[in-house]
Length: 175
Length: 273
Image (tube, rainbow over all chains, first blue to last red; front, top):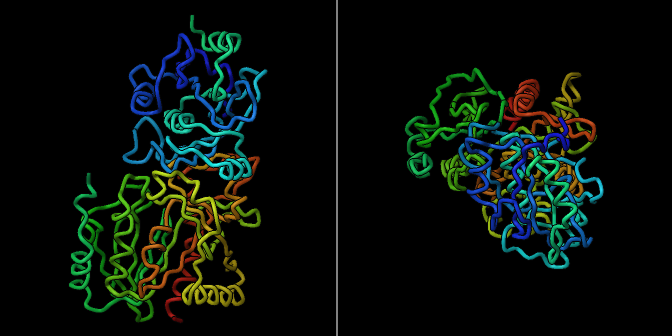
């Protein structure tokens, strides 16, 4: 079933950019993120805000799909019993929230990998518009736990505009 | 972790030599839900735990090794394999292939359940791998997949794949019910999640005909040894933009249906080689 903006009520907002006031800030994807998604008070939806690399536009965008080019998956290893061994990933990204923002496909890269111009062109040829480091592993953990995801990408030197943040807060029902 | 208790290759080979002084003419590794070569003559079975020191933990992977005869020829059938997505190291994932090569088995047939990307494929088709793309190698852990999506797929055509192809052609000609083999490139991804729509589109642009989570480690392991390998994918679903891809139970069901044709193919290939 497709995820919709109504799924975002009560969503946890997690910011990997360090620029979004009022959210839970994280430096990078890791055990802290997983602990929240799998914790006792696990959310049914999560808003992930991450920095994009090589974004073709100078304003935020929402993620509608991804390519996992990290070469790894946080789901490898013994299966966490809160989700299926082989989860499907369709219908996890919330696409109908924030209609003013463009929708992009993001390629998830390994932390520290800086794609060359040729590699960026290759990635774009394969259908991704931009790259990021945290959205894809976060989404995999969330999808496995049947948690819906609104993923927002911020350009490299950009910040989250106030009006967009207000809309996010409204959608999630946070004060 | 459990894998630390895996036997060294030499110990596993020694165990098998005690079980059978005769070296089998071929080994067959069966993937998820694939069931062939049952009721072998003079059959004896042992659990993976006894042979390798560990057992697989995925539904559809039994974890047993049977030795028996098909028309007098000794074959080894390995039901189940170890996967990287289960958290096993490369050494464990390739353990069975290394044992097969060191035991001196000349021919290795590999099977897997795979998602079809080629739109001319149908559910239940059998695809002979003519090439593969390695997108699960632990060597890609540091760099990510960028090196893996550059360049061409690795070809895997040899005397054994030619033999399977000819046998299938003959069966197709002689039997109304036997669909001929499809042929194509298999992309191995780490998993365990199924692919996103964008990943499917990428794989299609990479000219992949099927996608799965196994087999490439074994193909790479026996390459350069005296063991020749041929691999067949059982196409358990075919990607369509209008349908959500099925889960693991659908994979097992489709694999079961195709197993009868695969059984016929393997028996004919073993007898005529």
